[in-house]
Amino acid sequence: MFKGFTRFLQRPGERLKSLFGSQDGPAVSHGLQIIPRDQHPVSRRQFSEAALKVLYRLHNAGFEAYLVGGCIRDSLLGQTPKDFDVATDATPDQLRDLFRNSRIIGRRFRIVHVRFGREVIEVTTFRGRPNDDHGTHLSQQSEDGLLLRDNVWGDVEEDALRRDFTVNALYYNIADFSIHDWANGIRDIESRTLRLIGDPETRYREDPVRMLRAIRFAAKLDFAIAETTEAPIRELAPLLLQIPPARLFDEVLKLMLAGQALATFRLLREYGLFAMLFPEADESIAELPWAEALIERALANTDARIQEGRPVTPAFLFAALLWPGVTQRMARLADDGMPPIPALQAASQQAVSRQLQHISIPKRFSLPMRDIWDLQQRLPKRRGKRAFQTREHPRFRAAYDFLLLREEAGELEPGLGAWWTAFQDADEHEQRRLLGKVDADPAGTPGPRKRKPRKRRRRASSPSENDG
Image 1 (cartoon, one colour):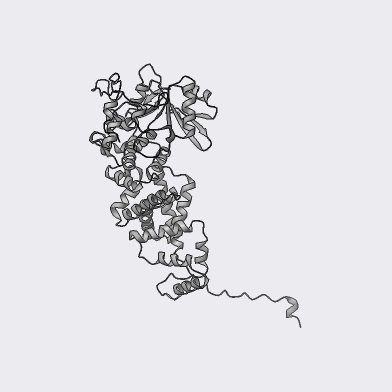
Image 2: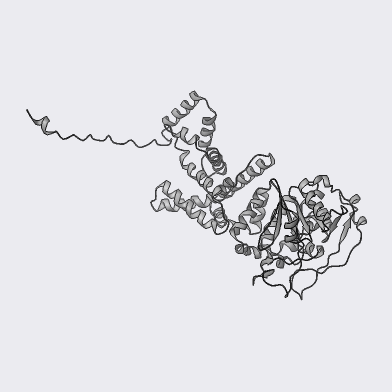
């Protein structure tokens, strides 16, 4: 698609020094390359109506306005863009005045969300390089280099080189429909290479989440990570422990719900990042022969559902990721003499508590997740009315799917899943036959304990009954 693009690149522009790394370090130069509309395939027809409204209102008000990042990258790759981000020289306060349907969010990075019904267009002001004249209310870094606040405004050139990857520093100019390439992003799209802008170690220290973004884009785009970009990741992986658990929850959803969860999981493990997100799951994989297979099957099923346009729930994913650790804790509690049900409840609480120190899991997902776990103890109990009661549970279908995963991964011997498959699809006569088969199976699940008949207490005789 892009062969010969370099023939059309115009106005090389001024060579720009890198905005990253130490003041005394070597400068990394980039040149502006402009690709006119008649020499690139990106069309306004690919953009949402809401994104175009934002662009044109900014342009008509006298501001610079660009679509930037993933939507341009994906369009150039022949994919349908889903999210539209706008970059402009208008400040957040000016944007708030210009769009009544907007609100300013964030303290660390102030951005503006412009809402059109259910669609949100994210608008950011060009960011510049902080200096000593900027107070901590505008720019602040930790001793380790982590950006705590970054609200220094600049121009489009500075903004482009503050972006993370070269393929995301592509700007679509609504004024003339050209694409501005500030960091040789077109070259890296042609070679399918993911490359950080600036010094990788400095960029990762500024925001360790960039390591997760590198994995996500590599899996999503099927790009190779440039050698210099991947080199520091394993050593710097523990920096993710500095990131608030709530932010990591959002990042994990992006990692696992983009349709490439299995490939993402394997890359996360390869670069030592998975242990920073799910430490107990990582430990369990090394100790339980079925743990990795269970997780990989859950992720593969999630990818298949997304490709088919079917709904997925993070509760099921988290249930699979944390289950190996829960079983280990439960086994230790059982060895100490705790009965199965209290052992599962205690193990679940302990596993979730540890996980929340790394990634927060909202209750709207953690409660269904624990229901899926609790039902694993109810599914084997099928005698009497129990099978019907279990089938009517709101989480039955998810728990049944989870049971099948456990059997496929080798945690459980096959059989119980096939029984439930037959039972839920059977008519009343066949269901009675299946239940009778459970009752007749000596190795089947034991029924409820029979209570000893209670002795009836003899009522004391009244005085009148003893008379005469």
